[in-house]
Image (cartoon, rainbow, N blue to C red; front, side, top):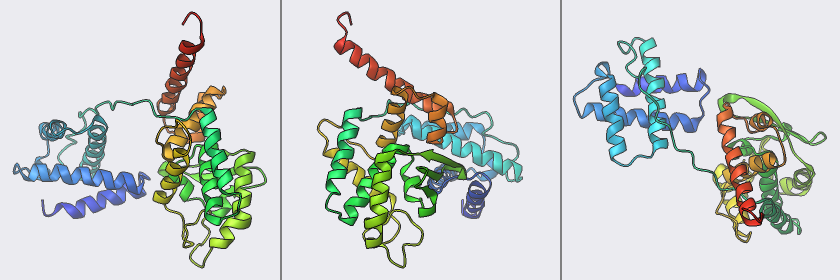
Length: 301
């Protein structure tokens, strides 16, 4: 469909400005829609011919090609959002995706660190920073802050210096949908933050650093890929720990909060989940770990 790109660009603008969707989500949605339009084009169907049977055929073809349920769920969400928007704009005669059901994505229990493994990872990062190397000081802060707060790695990399209240040990986070929340952190993370601000950041800062809290080796704002590498390498040094990136530390933080007796809705607010159902996944992790301990330790297990 040669005339579809301007429409997709307009839809992308709608997702960004009206819905507050992240750049990552928008890229995924537009990729899904281009796949749909190519599917339709191959069957001689124009945008005005989009129908529920066509949409179901497109999803069935993706499923037949081995697409995961999570991918099918996202594709369905993308086309439902587009169809509703296009119908309101008069680009479609009705909303053909209104009755399209989002397939339930299977939610696997996330891998998490045991509390002793998390402590070992933090200790390893602290030990590596003892000599005051700026990058080691930064790496320690990355893992400490991710584990202490449970924030997303994109949120971490987006932090500015002014987002951190060192006196009250609070960090202001801009999350999904441009929703702002405030998350507390403990003394170990505060210690790592103080060391970074005193000796690490000044050594790396350049005219290009701006207000960014975390910096790369060349003084620019730290990117997500670099932060992921730091976490993978830090956790890999812990005996018996699963392979884990920043999201694994987020999972671990949530699970350990619940194991410590935190209220589920408080954890939901700390993590920035819009749905309690997302946070409830961690209760299953905590219960499964309790079951494993019970099976191993109880004489009548």
